[in-house]
Image (cartoon, rainbow, N blue to C red; front, top):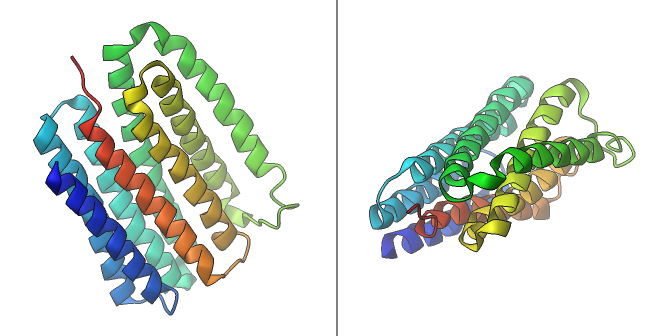
Length: 234
């Protein structure tokens, strides 16, 4: 328990240090601080498993956190090396998308074990919610000053995966409140990516958005890691 809280706090401290340096310039030091922050939220989850014991759900959550770390590093390379920005964006976004697939499998295992009766219909409803939310993000994008360019298809696919995952986590939490920490983590993840889209595709280079985006993102991953302490399977 102490290790979980400690590394969660360390993750946020290094996140803020990263933001301070990243707001000045994207370089090796800022990337190192970001990597340390991501390693800390993984350790946060690992110590939670040490407390609770391992099962299919929490091991899949750790896999999702690891893929988040990989995505973190690659997306920062996009900023450091803008000439290869599209390639780094595709690989980094794909890493996060695969991470959300692992989160989905974690929720699915939990759903199957704890509330199996709602599994078929809540997946279908969440697919519908994800389609609506994705269209709500993509269709008015030009009016909102967002230009996805060649990345429009990967952004749309990632948006669908993320919004589905968020909706699915919420649907499980409604029936079992101990899942709300994970679900809130997914909601905050979604908010962080909305802010990120303003930076990547809206041309907003405000330093304040660097702080908002990353604090939301690391808060999301920390919440997801801490949720391992509460997600139990009888």
